[in-house]
Amino acid sequence: MPDLPPPLRQLQAEFALSTGQLAAIAALFRREMAAGLEGRTSSLAMLPSYLTCPTGLEQGAYLALDFGGTNVRALLVELLGDGRYRVLGRRSAPLADPEGAYDFTAGAARDLFGFLAAQLADLAEGEGPYFLGHSFSFPCRQTGVNSASLIQWTKEIKTAGVEGQDLTALLTAALQRRGLDHIRPVALLNDSVSTLIAAAYREPRTDIGSICGTGHNTCYLEPAPPWGRQPMYINIEAGNFAKVDGNSYDALVDQASEKPGAARLEKMCSGRYIGELFRLVLQDLTGRGLLFAGAPASPELFRPSDGADLALILGDESPELEQIALWLDDRGQAGRHSLDDRSALRSAASLIAIRSARLVAATYAGVLQHLDPAVHRDHAIAVDGSLYEKMPGYARVIGLTLAELLGDRAGRVRVYLTKDGSGVGAAVAAATVSR
Ligand code: BGC
Image 1 (tube, rainbow, N blue to C red):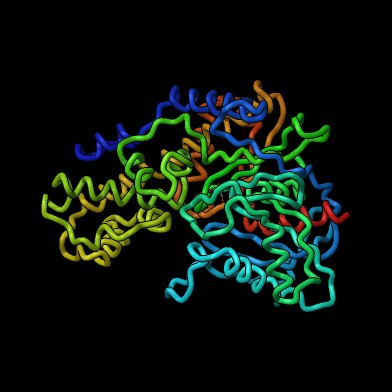
Image 2 (tube, rainbow, N blue to C red; image 1 turned 90 degrees about the horizontal axis):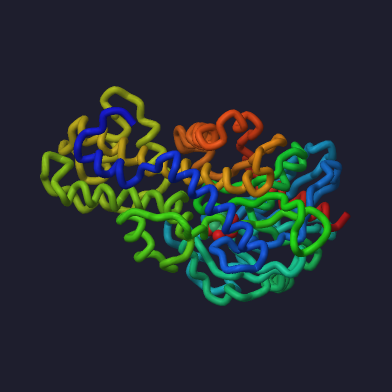
């Protein structure tokens, strides 16, 4: 980053990661993967999915439920074979109503699963049966393709009565309560796995899937899983990677979170947390008199921020940084900011977003080292999520960092966006299971 003003140089030192540090992170990630697979102590859970590659020929109409950290989506997908599909119907709703009418992220299991069942009702108006794939964006202990219990909530969700419970049983009970017995859940899978399956349905060479959105995670096709003879998709639960040192802001984010000590990498990288990192940085710089000519800022400035705020700030390329000006005006700072202040905000947002993308790329390098240490073969990484899709420069930095770590061999690795992957992948998974 060119010529940062002095207040930001220290910040840069806190968020910068050298090539050497990233290479060490990649190596540690690979080691934690191996330990997790062998059942040794590891911050990477390496969870089996009991699913293997689709053929690309799957056909028929399937329901998909995509339960993410922010929204729930229901889809009716017609798989046409040949890697093609059509979405016949779609419903989407936030888990917490922005107007405050409901909040299923903090209530009881029965209400949450009732809400999920309700989203499916309109899409299953025929006689059925409708086979359903359920993409669930949280770590699950899986004992089969359709039986999985939630290990623990992440992303600050705290709905009671779900941790430790069988999720298919909870959903089936909710469907029955609504008289929706013609909807049959047949597969439950992590959203990283459903993203990878959706991508592999179209492009069979894709062997790594990842989410860079509200949460962060990666999965891959393990050629020699300890749980069977066939290659299997493994959910790494990459966001829980703990062998990475955070700075003082990371420590504050962690301490204030629902589960301190858990999801260390996710708290440094994902959309759920980088807005909070940005807020803490602003608070710190303002408190030290380094912004706004040393004047105290309006408390409104320190309202919660999220990944979308950072995307807006990074997307402002106007000479006077007008979008950032509006953002500051809206937060009680009208008439109290200079171009230098706005430019400092942009640099701070950039440091946070770049660190996120570089860390993610280092973990991808770790997965590649596990799969193919010399990168002899071609690989493809399918990524879904708002950060990868919408954060200016994010995808580019991932590509550049992989080139920094892999050199010429980076040419063998393609990273690409798989939009809506989780819903479509859940439908493909349902098809592979009910085939
Ligand atoms: C969860 C993962 C999930 C990721 C992306 C994390 O918080 O632990 O299971 O894949 O978010 O949604």
